[in-house]
Image (spheres, helix red, strand yellow):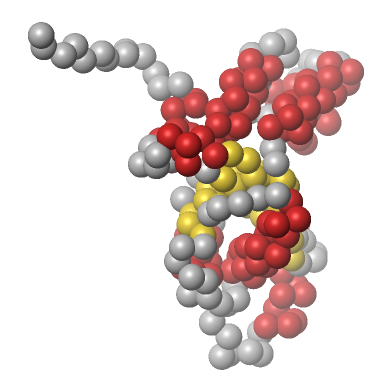
Length: 207
């Protein structure tokens, strides 16, 4: 009897992007693989003031992220329906929250925040003022790892996480996955390549 191949038509489900990241692992490791979902934040006021650069995100297992996505999408689809959550729009009732009452906007944010709290195992963040970075590192030509503020953010975020993994109850490798909408993606990638030079390859990976 010939085998039947199944083909599903239509757009991919959001959860498929998570399973794709761990598709080469055995089932038990695939479910429990730690994934750190990160974003890079750049305060545009840096050009006229102190400003701040920051990296922040949440860590959880692949299985938890799949559950997270399902609940997140379900809440987003409720009125007021949104495509993506932006804190500034919610607080000011602008953009996707235009015409919404303050209570409705804050209720939506609370629901989304509860989903994060339900599925995330840990929160990671690193921040630096570019002005302070230049004051400290501009005269040090020999240093290779922290040649940019992005490199400093990534280096301190990873080393900070490594110091606290046992306390947080996190075991095994952690994959760092960045939002693909980073405005200066090439700087983040450059920072990653420099940071890799300071760690054993089996400790960290990034996507």
